[in-house]
Length: 639
Ligand SMILES: Nc1nc2c(ncn2[C@@H]2O[C@H](COP(=O)(O)OP(=O)(O)OP(=O)(O)O)[C@@H](O)[C@H]2O)c(=O)[nH]1
Image 1 (cartoon, rainbow, N blue to C red):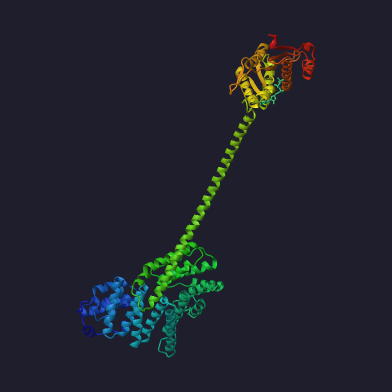
Image 2 (cartoon, rainbow, N blue to C red):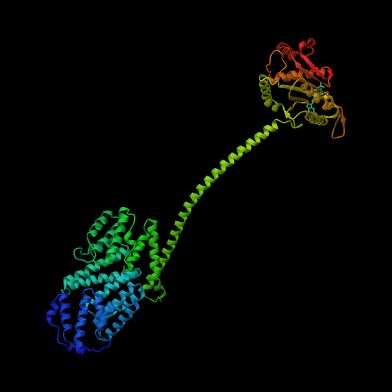
């Protein structure tokens, strides 16, 4: 301020014509501009410009107001103009507060108490809106005591009391909330009394009364959560006239739904939908509350309007909305509520805690808020943990499924391996079961599994006139019992082993040698002719008898054996191949015949003339046969 113009100079100017007061806004602006275009001095210019600024300001034109404030800055004594210019100036929060304080001091100095109180209340409101609760309490309490001491007019005191009460309720602890509500009730009584005394215009009184009912309703709905009382107070708001009509209906719906009165809540909600609030910030948070009510009433999934409240939304509303969201069932909304609450606490409220906490009301509330916020943080963490746990559970489930699949595959694979193993084992057992453990030769089981195939091959060969024949030999060690008895069973075993080795070497690879049982052995061999047949018998016999057995203990034993053989086919009248049992039996008969003839020899049946003779041989052997009745035998002794 250059203070180039004095108050006196201004006061000496001719008065503004009375009809100016009757003009409309545009007419006033025109009138002022016309005067400004005339040839006028700087004092008059200043007076007209500040009047124009007031008009612009009254009609919500902050940019136009500000441009006048800049071209014609207020003189220091010009408090209203200073106040108006401060309001539209593009200042930081701190700058504005400090300028308002400066103005407040100046007003007090000059004895403008009413105005000083209003400016202090304005400071308090700004401080509270930006979260500087402790300072806001200071400003309001100072304003309140100043207003009471100085007996400022009711209108000013009323404004300060309303704001102070609201602040107590918004940020105070239980005691302060009660104090705030008492203040509201006091305002109510005083306003009614002044109205009844005709000291207040009825319309103004009604506005104040509606505002107070509303404030009491909100105090109970949002802060005390006493929804019965909230419904009572909100129900008194004049819905026809009050500017808070829509808010009152929405908060009534909220209170009703919280009380479980669904029908009443739906009714309030319907009514509120018919109205619109002038303030876009309020309109937006009311939409959020409507959705919160709907969420409870109709299980409406989301509350979209609550996700992005207007940035200028009052702190108390933001806090309340976030708290309500954090109490919803949907975990996403709950987490969002917790997060927003925590962020709000971090960004605005936490600073307050760092300031000194004297006996100010805010300290009690702030510690409550801090506690609440810490609780919320805990909750938030718990929710996160829950979500993590849920995620983990889902992962574990799928892992479990994979594990089950893996185990299933393993079981199947293991099962298959087991089966393979068993098959292999079975094969091994089979192989083992077809071997004689003492000599390592195949046993009778092996023979029985193979012989039919051999016979079939001979059968086929005969049909194709290939002249392939099969010889079967049965032979055993002579006087083996004696050997056992003389040298012991172990020596007997060694003899058997050596016997098996020798016979094996005497035979061809394709011949089948089996231990038939005890000290009896059997050979099946394919032969070309009778000579071949006899040769094999000879080779077996010779392998055993040609030199004595030398046993591991150095014992030398002469061992002999008797071999009986039969060639197949042996019947001259039919080509049919007999059963293997018949062949073995015939070989046995031949061997028995060899034994009876003195042992240590081989006897081969080359031919049997008829079936009958075969029958006889099988039943009675060769002894009873008169010259063998046509049976052709060949023995080693014949050579
Ligand atoms: N050491 C031993 N002896 C066996 C085995 N199997 C059978 N023997 C014996 O072999 C002997 C066979 O005796 P016999 O059937 O009378 O025949 P042998 O004394 O050889 O008389 P011939 O055959 O008529 O010359 C019996 O004493 C059996 O105990 C075996 O695996 N080991």
